[in-house]
Amino acid sequence: MSDFDVAYDQNADVLYISTKLTGPSYTSEGENGIVWSHQIADGRLVSMTVMDFNAHWQNRLAHLTEQLNEQLHAPSPVGPMGRAQAAN
Image (cartoon, rainbow, N blue to C red; front, side, top):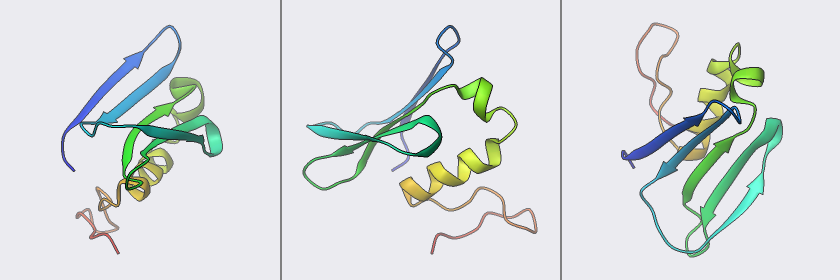
């Protein structure tokens, strides 16, 4: 999965990230105000809505990135030696 639409609503302080997947989905709110939407058919991630993005996450972007990578089953962008890490 490599195509994403990303938008930030400055007035609401909400970051929207969506994949290009379509179809019926269900949502669940995770920790720290992140709303995850998954396809009903196969459970694949459709979108993420990050509430209070600037207020809550500005100083914790590495933690947010870890959570997003975990949900997307993506490699971490930077490992301890400054290289991309492979997903387990």
